[in-house]
Image 1 (spheres, rainbow, N blue to C red):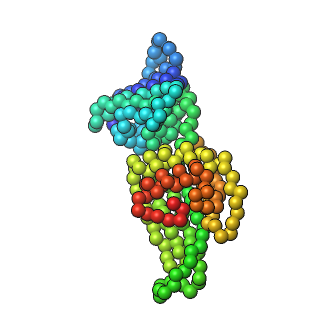
Image 2: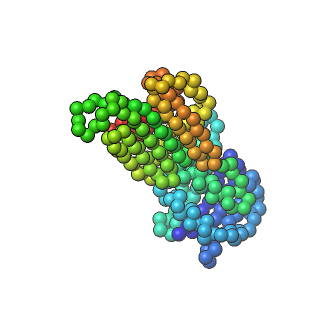
Amino acid sequence: MLEKLTFLMEEYSLKVELVFKDRQLYYRVSKGSEEEKAPMQVLEGGRRWLRRLEKLHLPSWRASYQPETPPEVHHLWRLAFKDSKIGMRRIVGDQAYPGSWAAFIDLMNDIPGVELHRVKQLEQVSLILQDTMENQGGNIYLPKQKRLALTEKLIINRGKHILVFTRHKQGVGTERHAFDSARNVPLLLERIAAQAARFGSQSDTIADDYLPQVEWKLVWHDGTEDSGSYTMRGEDMPEAWKEFMHEIELFTGNVRGRIF
């Protein structure tokens, strides 16, 4: 059970303090260089707030979050909390964040006096490829058509921390690959979010009935959605798309499809 928590965000000159005692959750919000501290107040629905906090698994957060390239302008944030089971933890970051950061910011915004911008964090990716494949024949399990319809679907979901890839071959059947990782699925979404954000600014002007088509949909934490389609054309694909797919290839290892 959480005993106390302190959250500081330099970009907003914000300090949030929480203390749980006498079966109540108390809070205090300070902004700027306030010298006199306001008294602690009871947070309405405090126990429900704590249950939501537990789902973020703060003890699993790393001690430090830093971007791969040192930022020109620093936006530091600090979190310190004491839990009855694990004791005291301190975490610091600078324009780099844990996978459940967007949900954490939403939780902070439920405290009166806290007004932080919602995070445009990538929550879900859906890809559907429609293509055909040549029927090699010579097998009693294969249908008689010369070409078979091929459908591939890829779903990545942060909340369920799963990646699911399915491939359906007409008249043959469906194969399914599922990856469940509370650490790596959010990490994958973090690493492909920048490329995914560039999809909307790219238009696919090539239409060819003989090339595979991919329908894509992105769901962001702030409630917005993006969708579109691409015609797969090998090395001619936009750089953002190739980088996006390469990261998925690394994640799935030996699993391969037409999409990646």
